[in-house]
Length: 257
Image 1 (cartoon, helix red, strand yellow):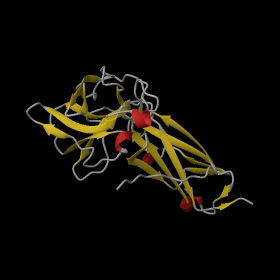
Image 2 (cartoon, one colour; image 1 turned 90 degrees about the vertical axis):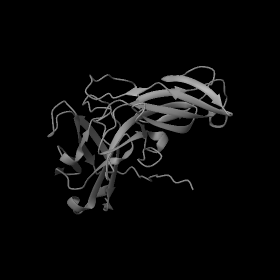
Image 3 (tube, helix red, strand yellow; image 1 turned 180 degrees about the vertical axis):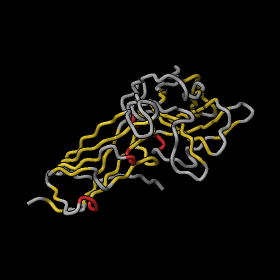
Image 4 (cartoon, rainbow, N blue to C red; image 1 turned 180 degrees about the horizontal axis):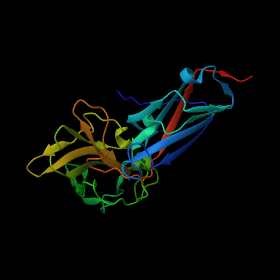
């Protein structure tokens, strides 16, 4: 069975968002404050404190999505959510990147490609922790992936499947599990994303069947019995990180006129 999440939206309001490193948790260190201004335009809520719901997603991740309802201020048709603690996100880091577009050469961050029993394999270069390092900008795609291949006319039908081998050099982290995260895993944290720890080699490992293309990914730590992935232990949190926000505004209210 194949399942996928989707949303149907109707653009009846204007939403403007801003991100600041100045938060109640820290200042220009590890978090980002999201502030929102919503122009209700065609909608007329009777009781904005109870009729409005706003959901904010960071890089399309459902595990750390924020939800706010009661506005900070209401000025005519404009509703604001300013300095709301519920809209403070760990800043995270730029995504790691890799690509494998051909079986004839190694792509970005690929150490080796091979064929075993008619199956292509791509072994990635080992990854290391990026926490407690200096922030470095990289032009990532905020967790997305693109199906691509060299010397092909239609990547959707001609791109080959590779078993891609991920390794993260790290001590075993107590109190939780390490998960591989990105759009190619639907940003879900489950058995398919959970990495196994190889104590003999001192590394986390995961092998996944993927189609040729460009991929963004990151490593998240999920505490035992938790559902939210943490970037701090493995990727680090840097306020300069350029994240993408998706905003969904739900209003149980009537249209003007």
